[in-house]
Length: 464
Image (cartoon, rainbow, N blue to C red; front, side):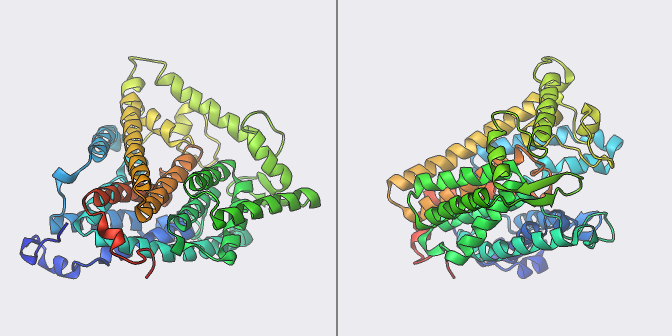
């Protein structure tokens, strides 16, 4: 798809348009990649970079919208059905937010990011379609991200662990500058692994493979859902790239690591952030992470957290799905109310917990059955679109596109699994990443259908 000529650029913003000169390495793309890297390395701490109440996530969203308007790149005729469904979901989310702003103020807007950050899906879709070469630039940037994040997340996690309460905080918020969660880290580790599988030229050497395996092992012991997210992506990659050397090495390292823990009996205790609970890295912990899914376990607080989640989710189902015809069935509780307080499941002294550790349940509780239905239809439609493109490109022997769709689908899978057991999509650290993957996936599918030679025109599209 050709870029518009200079005379087609919105004349209302000539200075802005000149600054945002058209090229594959568009300034917004570069800035967006830096911000996504910051979220991966600093976690929640990166979310508070900015000048309150405007932080980098909101600024990036606004800049993307302005860029699309300035260049007139929004083309409704190219919009797939999945994005139209997303638009309906956003309209319903807006309808469940506006009535509560007067009562809850900023809290309503903060909760509304669950659907509000989906604006990035629209931005990335039209942004990449406007100049498909940007997809190549994005993949090259991610190759660099894979190295920086792999080393940086391990370093930042270690720093946060060692400094503990001594970690500096932002002066305008009671939030440490670095505040990473195991689940968030594991999502990116799974994405990096999938990227290595997407193209042989992106494969890393033994040192980086070892660092990924060790990091995944530590995060997997620390959080059960994180372990399952990584294992699910590993299995997906194995299904499409069976016997790949990287996968075999990581599997062998995981097996040897578990054997070493079992034989030596080593136990390392790690405090859980913001609580007095302790998680341990040990053979027994890994075994309990797996067995705890099917039956009770007496290791750590696994049963406590599992039962707490299940009871809360059951309560949400009870006052929405089981009370057909009631207000909560059709409308939910809206955005603004603290669900943990209102449902009676608050566990934080400062009442900072607001979401039931499951994005699907949060959507059901806040938007009712209509909102959840739109959400599920949209996600199923996206999976069908990307999955069909993956299978068709595989049958056609198009390794480049097969690898790309595998990478995108695997990243989405890791996000969905993590968001089903943790607060992930409700913040910029996970929400912006998820909706970026969502929009890039749809754009890649459109480019593949209309310009399949794009990846083939580059001898090695993932490398500089």
